Length: 159
Image (cartoon, rainbow, N blue to C red):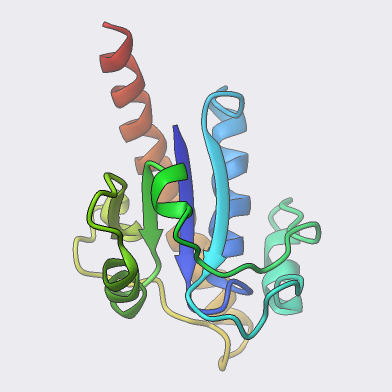
């Protein structure tokens, strides 16, 4: 099972989601079963570390994002990942526009797993510290829901 988090530039929301989700997988004993990565729609930040404000907010909660590096969504991702989780509606539209016809990956808004079928993870890039904290709050909530969904799917596959 493989999960890819997608935002615009892969320096704020999606690397935060990757870090938070990795921690949630470890808490639930699924870190060896579920693969995780993140990427961006655009190429502006390829090779760069996550935004320093995103890193600081994550570190305050015990999550280290410093080893991550931004990359851009690639065609191979549609075949390597089971889930492509968009941070907002524009990201989801870009994913669908690039999706190969034979891709079976599920592409949805990430906050669907927190019970918000139409809500986006807000981009904190142009805001202050509270925006980065809000992102982590939302991502933590959705991560718990996603782990539960994956656990159910894995159990169904074993049956």
